[in-house]
Amino acid sequence: MHIGLFFGSFNPIHIGHLALANYMSSYTNMQQVWLVVSPHNPLKNKSQLLNQNDRLQLVNLALDFHPTIKASNFEFDLPQPSYTINTLARLKEKFPEHEFSLIMGQDNLQSFNKWKNYEEILKRHHIYVYPRPNCSPSDFDTHPNVHLTEAPMMDISSTFIRNAIKEKKDVQFFMHPKVWEEIDLMNYYKK
Image 1 (cartoon, helix red, strand yellow):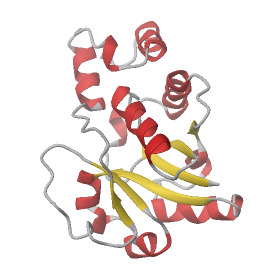
Image 2 (spheres, one colour):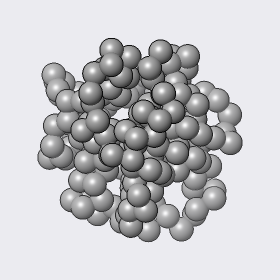
Image 3 (cartoon, one colour):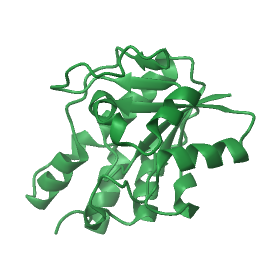
């Protein structure tokens, strides 16, 4: 099975994440998309993160038993911070029958050379890239394993949502209704 790995903090998951995952599972040759909740992205500040299990719960609520998009806690038991090269190696060990591709935004592709062992990732895996606002072409755009998609441009971020919640703004339509209900009920991101 060809599986697309959409790594993220999902802090919180929002409609942009869901629309992109849906696009990738519908418009590419990927049979499933796994939303891999990262306990700690080495390029992000961990103190801003909601607990990993709470973020996973929000992703599960958002997916609502979707047939081709799944939540994954695969990185929870791996050493932190999470490096994609290590996760990919462990996934291949555990699921040798699957082919794994990466899903990333154009902004991440621009800084891909900062990733640990990025050359190895590029050699062994395909990368499906969705457009991001204000991104210029990168050196990786023409690599044979990089596929620039025509996914809709999503100019929405988890940071925007967290800040809006702190400011007591109504952002319920930026998230799946069950995610919004849980965030409101649990008072997530209000402080």
